[in-house]
Length: 82
Image (cartoon, rainbow, N blue to C red; front, side, top):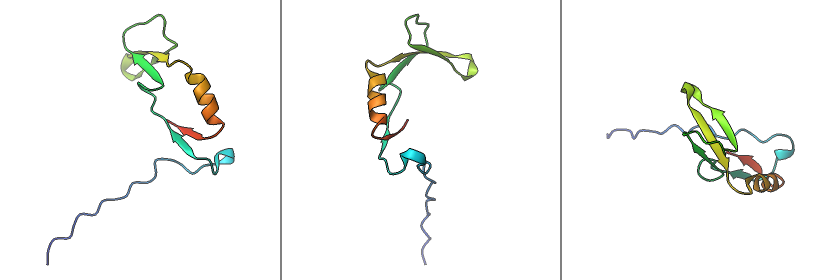
């Protein structure tokens, strides 16, 4: 008799069950960094917003052109996760 093959444990789903008005909607998964936003760690006075990170670092974040309009339009049709 040979060795039994290792069995991989199937991870639990990354997404929770849909609730409320999201039930039945298709899910749109979006990548934030470098796609919808761009963050820099050097001080930038023209950033759209600033995020204080753990460890004392600060991220200066810029939104891509028209990202707000895109997200609002997609939210009408999809459950959006990032």
